[in-house]
Image 1: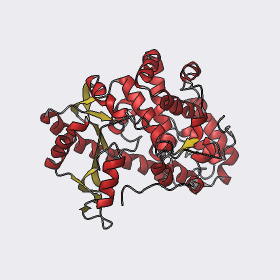
Image 2: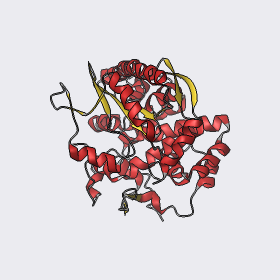
Image 3: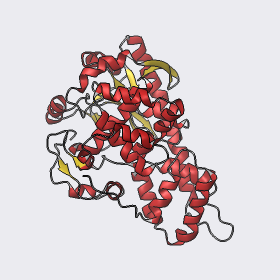
Length: 383
């Protein structure tokens, strides 16, 4: 048994979720206007903006508000204050992502020239191929998957481009080396290399960041054994303005699901508040729609079974369906459902310290203080 969901949400959250999708049709626009008519003058707009930012939705929500004219009123003042905030957030995010893509394209050229086998994951792949608008989805770093034996060579490629392993100093003027404790923790506990960074100096970007990963299935202790096979199935194509390599479509979806499951339940991410946000589930929903359009669910199911990540896929799809029920096929959820779903309310299992949440998912998702419930503390890998 897992904790049952409560459908009661604040009006601000209801409006946020109506706006939190790639395509907003006229019926949803009408529903937004109805919410604004009923509650707009009583909305806590500070709470709305805070949640939109915490859920990493502010650029997308801002685009939808402006594009559909929801900030306009037939009479009197707008029911949505400060429309410039939404306009500038969208355009600012777009400008930032364009700068990141330009830099990451240079990294891709260098990786190609090195002859290394690699695959790019998540951020730029989703931004370009799923969202199709560089202003809609925030992007942070470039995630590069290689085999464990190639991490040193990949690091050498990045160092030649001016990257170093370290963290940004508090004054924002330099990158400092990681402490010995951080390096030890990372070497023993993490399936990714310590991040490589390079000073940027542009507005909105302190540093360019590249992460090198050798195991995308971190919920499995033996997940690294699949990296070679995943790289053998990689596909070539344009990315960041250059030719590059990404995971095969089915593997890309499994990667998203496994990454979501890991971050939603690992003590490190839970205690730092980086476990949940709506954007992760929107990513899943959008790719689910793409899989349905291409009729690729049988291939996805088989691949999940072959790689032993059915629980991670079900975890991601189950929770995405609570937010985007139209996107996740009920039949596929039933086909993937494990016999025991108690793990859906657990965290800490990756570290061998499983604990259970006392509140349902939707209540936790929008509560910035959910980490107060966490009884165990996580080691701090970056200090």
